[in-house]
Every structure is written in structure tokens, then in C-alpha cells.
Length: 247
Image (cartoon, rainbow, N blue to C red; front, side, top):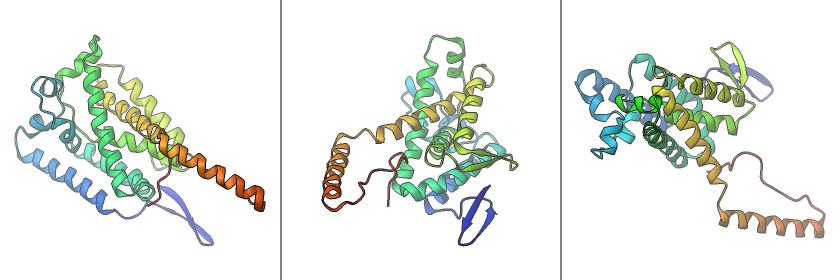
């Protein structure tokens, strides 16, 4: 739920707007796979994320397919709701191509980090090797992290009641995932949640570390400063919006 204001008035609206073709495709794929899980026995075991299957039998497709499987109706419902709520505005900012790239990078990256974590010599970590991990939550948490960085002061109505700035909402979700992952029983999916947050942060931070683009930026700024000295105009610069892409 968000507060919107256009023109001369303001109003409260539920959701960020209609579904884009990209979101329709992602949500449709998740729904189709969820239905197939219900009718095809063993599909979840064949497509879910399992450490031995990926590292020993090299069934690498599981790094992608686990993102489209869910454990129940509420699991898929809340994941798809979050995908719509946070993904819509990010796609408007990034464009469809970059949005889909970010979605799959964070989802696959969360899976890879989960597998690496399961190899650590700790009982909590090694317990993950015996589980079949499913769900889009790794990518969803990546989108949540990006939303908090792009719209830090945008109010998010937690439980439809309490308005919380997006940056604090992301922190709360991260802390919950971290502490939940400290127990063997509840840390299965939360390790993947944390992986999605970490991969999303590193991916967005890495987007700013491009030498050629940095050199071009400073060259253009130098030219603008020369123009300012000649014609007494204001020098430009980039907004603090985490490398916003215009499409």
C-alpha cells in the first residue's frame, strides 16, 4: 500500500500499478510450475535446489528452476505479491532488460551462495545439504534491497497498518532473516534470503564500478565546469540514486 499524489490532490492506492509483460511472464511461469507441482509427482524433487544434485551430479538447471517452485498457496501468493509490489517500479526505472537480468542474477546468485554456505564445516551449514530448497524468495529479497536503495524514504505499510520507510523495512527484513537462519529448523530458506540481499547489494554496487563510464562522467563534468566559468551556469552532477538507468 502506498500514498500517491498527482496534480492538485492526493490519494491512497494499493499497489504500484498494472502488471508489465515481464511481470506477467514471471508470475505466469511461477503459477504454471506450481500447478504442475500439484499434479506431477516428483517434479519438486527433480527441479528443487539440492546441494548433492548440483555439486556431485552437475544438475545445474536447479540453480534456475528452484526459483519457480513453491511449497504452498501462501508461499507463492506472498512471493508473487512482493514481486508485483516492488518489481513494477524498479522495472520502470531500469527497463525490462535490466530488470530481468537483475532478477535472475540475484536468484541464481542466492542459490550459489546457499550451496557454498552448505559446504562450511558447521552443523547449521551442513544441514542444508539434506534439504530441497524452493521458492523465488532469493530474487524477491534482491528486489527488496534494490527498492530500499532507490526509494529509501518511500513508505511501506507493514501489515497494511504501520508506515515504515523502505530503507528501514529492508533492514528489518534482513535482521529477521539473519536471526531466523541461526537455527537449523528455520534457517533453510533464510540462508537463501540473505544470499539474495547480499548478491543484490554487490550487483548494484558493482554497477557503479565501471572505469570507462567513470572516466566519461568526469570528462563531461570537467567540460561543464569550463562552460560554467565562461557563461556562469551551474555545474551538473549525478543524483544519488544508485546508477539510475533511463530507458
